[in-house]
Picture 1 (tube, rainbow, N blue to C red):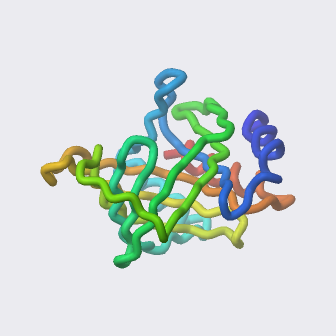
Picture 2: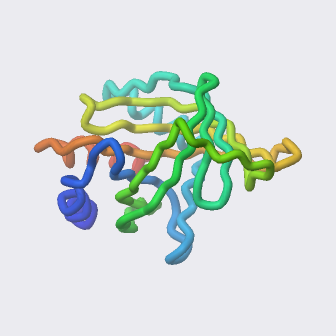
Length: 185
């Protein structure tokens, strides 16, 4: 927790509509690979444990994301966004049975000049389940169905991300609560 607190305190002043701090749960593989895939059974148990603490998730939007190299095209309710992500800083921290990847990401969203491409690396349908904590941070559970270019089922996986929106004196208390619930699962 100490490493995470230092990272967030160091980067929280950069958080705005174009920069965000994200905490992803998963498994560290090596310096260039972090596996964010989680098992459905683990997330179901996490949701159950969260509900015992009064944390309720609401069903969010269903997104269709076309991934091409280091950018993506996101379609949501027939609105298209061209998004590029750049990681400015990151930290990998270890817990008992899992790792977390904390990133400071620069997100550039363009809705007017969208690049047309014919071949994608993958197409992913994402169903989000969201818990918003007083506009300080958002916990996002994702059910991802990834398809190849021929629209064949390539992979189905689940993920958990915490998106920090702004600083607060009690943010670490609540982040610690979420992480401890996940650690129990």
